[in-house]
Image (cartoon, rainbow, N blue to C red):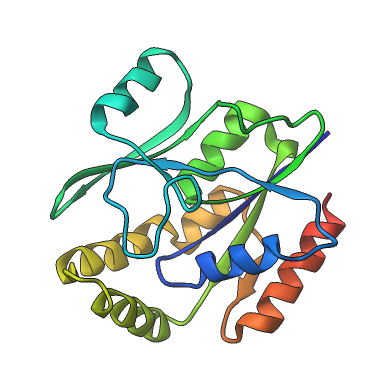
Length: 195
């Protein structure tokens, strides 16, 4: 039986870079599970790679069809942005292992849908000061930086990924991303040991 490895952590902890490095590891037979969102794509993001970018109307149609496994709605300074996982053409747990980026909430909902043994958490953490600097550096590169949203998300992540919430969710293993190369190697080893 396959497993879904759910890479998660606060914003700007390095999830996207780690995700790409793990997927480039030839010894890991991992498929991607691309999440969906109604937020606009950032510069450099490609539809079907980081996310499937949908309209609210398209999301509502998937919901009507009963295909949404989990959905999170965030009230941002730019409106409501939804992030969700769809039971679509991507998922074949009978024969494949997957890597996806998620949140603590999506991890718990995936566990509820597929079973506790089918979903493995990979929690990445970084010092808050370093994380804030990374987020600021990334936002400055956007054509229209959204600093208010950066601040809202930074504070929301502290609550969402609190020690209490991690403990309640059964997330006991963490990976420190002070240096991305050793962090990625540790995660790859952990994935191999849990396949």
